[in-house]
Image 1 (cartoon, rainbow, N blue to C red):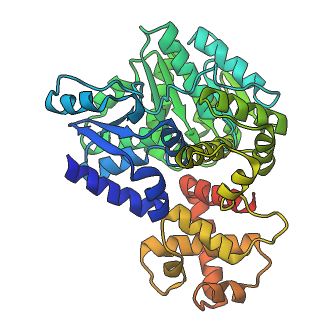
Image 2 (image 1 turned 90 degrees about the vertical axis):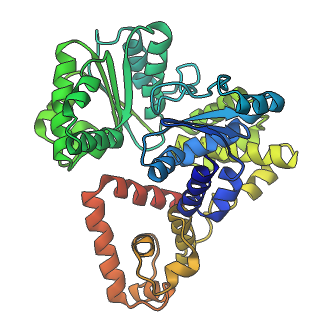
Length: 442
């Protein structure tokens, strides 16, 4: 068990970088790892929230890579454990810790309607979601919710599932990321288990699929989703879909799927106003028992333009810092703690700053990205950094090349073309590049 966890930790550190790993992941302890389940002990809910916001699923994916098994990750909060009882539990496998997360995959229990802050930008989508949760399969079927990254789509979709679980526990629900759905299709085809796949997805009461835009360019996945959609729809089973864009703007997806997406209700979520962002911060702070001064709330709201996930992530980082050093949150402390998150608007964006942000996301070192190494682990982040340097600065191609260890302008042009081509074909890659661009700009 310890050997598996140590390998998992090494893989996570490689993915997120040493500093991020030491701050947020190193303190996580393993309680047990079984055939299909891993129970981990996490210091407090701040860590859980930050990891969930910034690296969702990274622990489960890393465990799956190490063990070659599909392992469900369950977190136990350390402060809720009696250490003596924990030691006894280790000797007595019949005693199991209480689960912090015991819902369908990706359906976080903290995503509820009560915790969703309503404003003009999301009021319509929220109202539609509430109606669907009360009468699944009866109205607004399918419900298609779209909006930019971090605006609350996953929260609303999850809230529907959580409400149905609470009020209609006899109904069967599947909440799945589109990437996971694709992986299951591939696995079923490879191992000749399509009958099991169809039985899983076509005999349920509610199907919720998140980020459906990622099935673009995946022909077999679209085919299976189309037939699954039809089977559920004919039986009046509820279908809820989320995307970062409306159906007509999802590229390389079949027309028949687009038509299915528009059969019910389409609801969009717009970027929040500053007042709504402040309300969200205070709501989150109240839930987590964080003392958040008004000036800090307005400071955060003014610096994060639209992404609610990043907004909450900043609050969690401040709360964790406050807990660790035993100091209350104030404006000066917030500016100091978040100085690497917020860039000074009065200063121009530099290539060095872009390189730093790219290295943080890809988990590589600044020295390596400027070196002549051409490994896949370095080539992609180097090309992305060159692409963003060209997009976000006024530097010449030659100056950009020099900043990357003396590369010539032709290398920069080639890197930019490679990134543009891959972004058009690979939706996941495109999202990474755009999120990076937003982080650098804002």
